[in-house]
Structures are given as C-alpha cells and as structure tokens.
Length: 380
Ligand code: PMP
Ligand code: GLN
Image 1 (cartoon, rainbow, N blue to C red):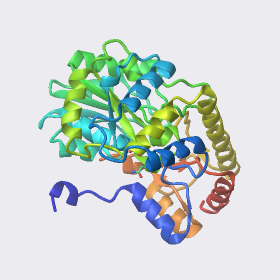
Image 2 (spheres, protein in one colour):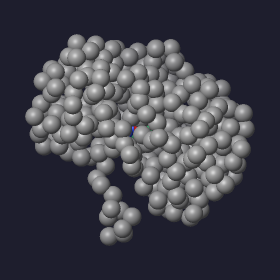
Image 3 (cartoon, rainbow, N blue to C red):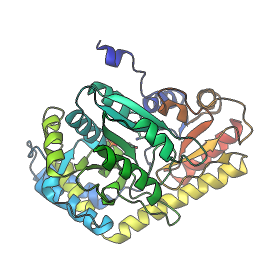
C-alpha cells in the first residue's frame, strides 16, 4: 500500500459510526441530521432521475447549478461571483481535494488551524505540501497574531481555514478573519476557506465569508456543500467558488478525481438554493431548538460546555465537568458502556492534541437527543 495511506488511521467518523452500528448505540458522533430535509428538493431529484438527463453532465457542473450558487451567494452574502467561477464537485470533500491538489506544488508550505477537519492534512500530504499547524485551544479557540507569525514563512503558498469551525462550532469574528487575510496578503498566499456550515450559525451570530475581506476576492477559494444546506449529507454535492486563475487549477485536478457529479442531484440542488428565505430561517430555527434541548440536557446532567455558535455540534469540557478521563477514553467508554457515540476532539490534531474536549452532534430528532442525553448522564 502507498505509505501515505498505510500510515493513516481510519477516520474517526467511520470508527465511531461503525462502533455505534455494531453496539446499537445512539449516534451523536458523526455529523448528519435524522430529520428536516425538504421534501420538494427530494421530489425535484426524483423527477430529474425519471425525466431528466442521466448521462455525464458538463465537467464544471450543470450551468443551472453554477448560476444558482452565484445567485445564492449574491443574495445571502453579497458576493459578486460569476457562474464561471463556480465548479461543482462531489461534495465539499472533493472540492477540498481538487483545490489542494490543484494549487499545492510539492514543497509548498500550507498553514492549517488545529483542530482541523480530518481531510485537510492527508490531502496536503498527497499534494506534497508541508503542513504548518496553528494550534487553537479552548475555551475560545482564538487565533493570535503571534501564532500566525510563527506558522507563516517565505514558503507559505496556501492556508486552509474552516469557518464555522468543525469540530468546535466556533464562528470567527471579523477581527480574527482580518488577521488571516493580512497574513495571506503579506505572504502572497491563497486561502481555501471551507464554509460548509455557513447557514448554521445561531444566537444572532453572522458568518463572514473570508472572500469579502480586503485583498481576498482574488486569492480565496470558497467551499460549500448542499449536504449541510438541505440536511442531505449523503448527496455529496459541493462546489468551489474562486477567481478564474484559481478555478482553472481546480478544474485540472477535478477532471481526474470525479469529472462530474450526478446531474439529477445537481438539478435538485439548483432548485433548492433558490428556495425562499423562510426555508433557511426555519432550518436554522429547527436546529437551534435541537441545540437548546441538547445543551439544557447536558447542563442538567452536570456537563460543562464550551462556547459554540455554529455547526451541528456542541462540545463538552471533560475537565470542567469533573471527569478525569481523556477524550478518547471517554468516547470509547461512552459507546461501549453507555451506548452513546461521540467524537474525541484530539483526533483533529496531528500532534500535541487538546485531550479534554468531546464533540456531540445535536442535529437529531427530539427522541434521539433525549435518548442520547439519558445515556450520557450514565456515562460520567
Ligand atoms: N468540510 C467540513 C468542515 C465538514 O464538516 C464536512 C462534512 N461535514 C465536509 C467538509 C465534507 O462535506 P461533504 O459531505 O459535502 O463532502
Ligand atoms: N463532516 C461530518 C462530521 O463532521 C462527517 C463527515 C464524514 O463522515 N467524513 O461529522
């Protein structure tokens, strides 16, 4: 086996979901909702399968979806994207792969922020890049100028940033984004900004696209995913949005990764992105209710929570909860002994991890949240 892969552990999401299936646990680990997808988007896909085009669509995506993505971001984020700047990919995962493989030259230094979504580091290595991690720590996961100055150098070509941040749920402020933008501009680096959680921000917080900061329009690759916007994570329809020179590099990699994505799903997503504001508001409010149910229940069970303003996730501080276990041990015991799966945040660090934080997914029906809470109460 290629040593690049042989030395990789199985992703924590598959590990925990596998254990959860095997042990018939309540799965509060992997981030997927078990309710709330829009029926009309499903109908549109079914109709497109039955009556639409089911052969290879054009490589960069159906024109109607590229247009719909541009219009969607003009409407919600005041971005001025042209459809030609949008590339449709098979999920944000492929968008990340196409952007990283397309833009990193072997030997380039790539700055990332840990805890980092688990796909980033292996992809940087596949591209021959050298990862430079900025370590973020609880409770506020703040980025400092000093940490950025240490990570950036003359060989920095790329930065990978995720906002809102999976696994912590942090929504970064304008000040924090400005630090990254300044570092990118000063070092002439490109930023890949993974914004798949952009619609899932709570308590009046706003998600600010990195692309809107001064100097960033031409040097940012914005990544989105229909899976999160429509609670259809298995669909794997994503996209990149980037200036033509970056889009050209992404296209070269994309053509030999997947080439295209199911046209019926693209048609349905194009339709869904045009849904009225009420859909997006109701989706956020629905998840906000589940989030409140989860945080109230965790509080009542004696768990201390860290601040979290977006995503499907909240995180528990084990130390603050009076639990003298590291996150990995806690999660393995919770799934085996209490029948509830969670994600240890230490998995999102390559070295020197934070080991006292556990991520829980609240994007579940009330019955599932309640059952999970009942079991978590016994896991401590
Ligand atoms: N990036 C982040 C930060 C994610 O959380 C996820 C999945 N939840 C992805 C990328 C992958 O998205 P997709 O399922 O569209 O490939
Ligand atoms: N992004 C999802 C999560 O954070 C899972 C994705 C995956 O299983 N690879 O839980």
